[in-house]
Image (tube, rainbow, N blue to C red):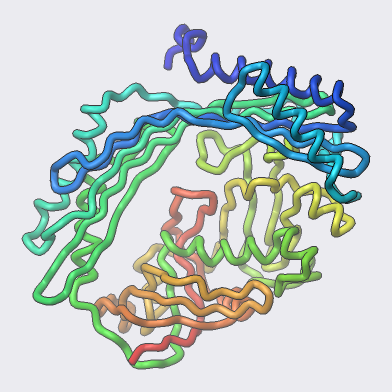
Length: 453
């Protein structure tokens, strides 16, 4: 979008209008007796299309959002929301929140984030890259994705469809500390799910690309080719004998391992004493070679944010330094429960960079380090207990022998304990997946229990 057109950009115009509404709501809450108040609104509009076997399955136009207000009065809290931004509806919503607060219990830990921690003048992180695309052009992209996959091999007999999505939107946050901030953002994605069959065996797999900037998406042809390669590689899987072997989590699912770690160091689980990492600050949780840094202000990154959902300024943090835990992930509420200070993680994490210098390498190098064992490319089920760290999930992937992929495997279960799995990380690959909030390569763990036949 050119600078000249910014003034006519409907998203920027709506953002400005909503900021004015939020300011009005905050004044109204104050006039109705609230000690403090915070208001948040997000809006998203865009286009989603999907095709299957060359036919259009779905065309959906999105334009939705809601404003939520939370008021605090004498230690009590009340919340209400509305999608109607008319003056009358806003007045009713604020009144409802104030009335609810009369009947809730006093909680000394609730309330706004401390004013000194707020992002009053947040950075522009270049998250907004609108792209005008017609419905026909979007459909053509999805069709091209499918066609390129179907043309690869006769065994690719069917498709679960291809989808293209393009969304623009904004977030606005304001509170009675005088903070009123907001920013626009975009997200574009293209995905393809293919089905391959060989005799009695039928397998399904996918590929996708996502970016803030449409121009940086991978081509529809390449996504189709990736999906076809993935599904063909899975044909005719075998089962394996139950044993303890090294396990390599491919980069695109390795973030699930870090996801369990995030849950274990999140304030809500800690103050409830529902984590196996209680009182772990300063402890060696991972091997000495492993570091995790959080960098919230990377331009255009998918998890970048100048402030969290409580308006707290985000900042660079070292989560893991030489294997040792440096910080918990806290909101204002969980921080007060623990007698600590919020870390700006209301709403989630912001761009984790996993680094294992000296213990990394390409994907092929990771296979060589694995030697003989299991490469996991799909996980199923939710058998993870954050309280004691026990881990058990269904899996599929490939059996590796002498550093080479031998054959696909399925109908297996992998099990261990997260504390031991974390300590047992041997290497983290340089094959970093940038399509999410955790930038990680493949993870090699020295030993896990694999249950087969």
